Length: 489
Image 1 (cartoon, rainbow, N blue to C red):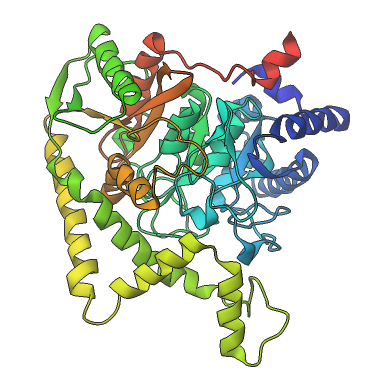
Image 2 (cartoon, one colour):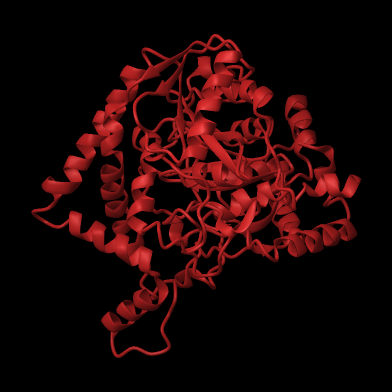
């Protein structure tokens, strides 16, 4: 990370200037739902003070050096992740006025190192979407072309990084929610191994699929954030200890890694096909052994994913009744009407659709036909990856079949958007890590690819990404140079 980032919050005056610069830049982009560095400093200060109290007398110089590298670095947080002092809206009318009473574990770990959460970013409502256009609180636009979408559901986080407003941002990834916007905006987007990073403080959508994720401007920052967040958490029983032999494995460029690329017809837009082939060619030129491979179960990933995700969403979102929390109607004749009105007014069309689908597949008599079959497909996909990673070390895949599409594109139906998730949903179903990375710019729009590896082998992803960055350096949107660069000119 550029050292300039650490100077933005050193004084109240600097923080005010930073706030004004970001708000001015974000006016036409809509990345942030809230941006308040001073409030972030307060939240981080409280967490750091609590940590210092707990570790009083500890003289760990390694931790001191690590904290010095992070001290004062600003970062953004997707608004489905809890941060004390900020709202927690999930991009929904249902939670528009809800403020978080606690802070997510992943955010706490970054704050204890000295990083500062400066704002909450926009998202598709409850993380359900691929554009960030389904947010009830505003639309987020792509910094490369504001007439186009940012991707989703973590579109606000990707835009905040791509437009140079923060060096990194936290998001979530349920079926490609960090990787697709990262590809659309030309940044890095990591979905960690399921269980590597605590989900405590992440508002649940599809609990068995989603992970807290990170969007960043470079590989080094992506890796540093991941390593800072990774750990077992007693507040999240799904977290898993990283195997000792992998915990400190190097992410340095390693051209001995065997790379697999998908063979056959992939149905890619010419620009994406060019970027994908260019990445494969670059890896060959760098000396990596590259071979064509098959992943037969990819064709079943989308229906299995949407069946499982909708089923889990229908259960997780049942808590929003307008009684304990959430949108509360002004008047209702009885409790049933109150709940019905709260959900009708509080949830958007996409959320309602997925709740209905999930309720349907979980009905008695339909579980065997749909939900249990989807779980069997999930097992088959995991087995397919186990087989594949016996032959190769890293799989290179497209992220999305097209570059960023226009807002309200009539030629791309919601069904087509969902089918296009076939390249990203496989990693979530299998629980393995995946990293989206820039692969060039075609016709003025960034193109991204992704690399996948076995569980807890994130270091392989960083190694390949570092090597590719030598041949395919990340470009920045012409109208949005990083704030540190603008300040130094």
